[in-house]
Length: 573
Ligand code: U2F
Image 1 (cartoon, rainbow, N blue to C red):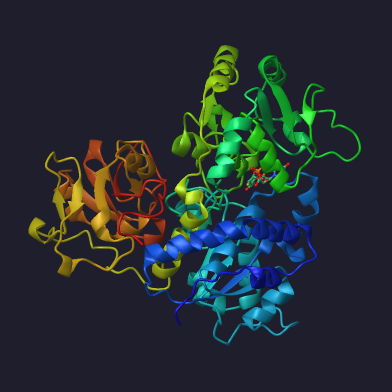
Image 2 (image 1 turned 30 degrees about the horizontal axis):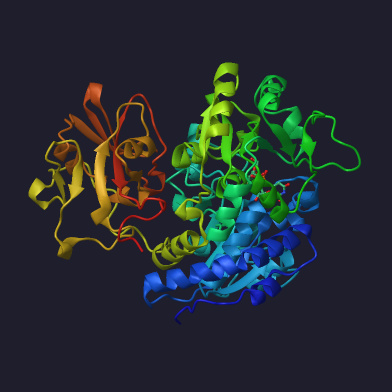
């Protein structure tokens, strides 16, 4: 069945159900963004020009909102608790619905069971009926529930699952056997999924798929209005819970708040019950927690949105920038990660977070984003002074617009298939003779720095993203493929590892291999240059953009990407 774009969101609101504050928040958001979604639908429809799109049967099971996993978020919606996850789920639901798919939404175990066809009270009996869904979007909590209640079918159907996973899951943590042997076990488990089945809030780990959310775009009238109404001396502090003011992850807050107070009027939206929270200094104008729409109105007047180091990687800085603010944040030196910071401890990633919001730092940057050392009073004060003089326009990166999100999810749904095996046999046997270069699909670039795909169309494997967008680079020792690709204006593409996991590729790149082994390691394919040993990957689930070690130079499969839509290469739609 062809999927037809929908032009009305009211049926979705019925599907979502009611009762919980979290659901009320999500529905309010969907209602408020409805006109933006519809405009975006129109432009995407034009871009896709009536292309065939299959309608999928989709189950959305929001595990963290189920009573069975504690639902700690719903009671905190009106008290300054995290809203980022709800922002994202609201947008995912809107996008899937607008793209014309058939949706079921569940937020309790009972509903999950009845949708999966498990008779109530028959807990973990193995499912014998076929799964009535092509795709299931859920989270780590939901995954656990499905494993418990789907019996043997879980293994069979897990390739249809997509896991919404804010901070990301690196391959080394995902594969049970490997995680257990090498100290990558975490509370979140190891699910042996294809790492691309994990979908993140920001495009921070190319090993996972970037799902994202949307930030409201302003029309011309609103942009003009903002320009003439900005108060150049008004700052809003990022953080809606008093605890953020108390135990912010950066030291000496009093000092830099005092500096800021010399130049600007400081506003906050910190939740309180009856009295002003004692953590918030008297000179701060606190509005209390605002409804999302009013919070965004406040940002329209403000010049500066300032972060105290927590929360990490939330939606608010993008909203501030979309409303014409400059975002000022603290650099983390050394970077925060699961190895050194409580918040990330036990999360299935070793990613190093270089500031409160690395996406804002790396993908947006100046003039919208200033990342400074808060311990350096002079640097901090100079930044404030410059920010007050700097004019910026409201800005939303394309990948965070409604159209960008629709385009990306459309591409994933039509092209990502984790139920089919890899399209080439894996792994290649390292023994025997190397394939003569004339048969290799790659050719060496003129300056001999990297390989490009050069095979003629008839031999090109049908992969997504298309292999024509691939370049193969070798990392420096100690560098990950994530950064290596980035250095060349590209992005690491794990789907391409299968094509470069070959002895012949080392030879073509003029790496000398005295021996070639095939082993399980999230660092392979790689070469240990000092001993001239080359290593191929034995386990496709361990292909990792993120892995690095000073012992190895890694083979990195990179691809081009569209500016403002890093998830897609040219010709990827
Ligand atoms: C992040 O969660 P948070 O909810 O703390 O993220 P924020 O960036 O603060 O923003 C969430 C939304 O809260 C809204 C605002 C944002 O869309 O419009 N809001 C509001 O409605 N009223 C107000 O007064 C102020 C803001 C992240 F998203 C999570 O994934 C993490 O778990 C969490 C901890 O790192 O940080």
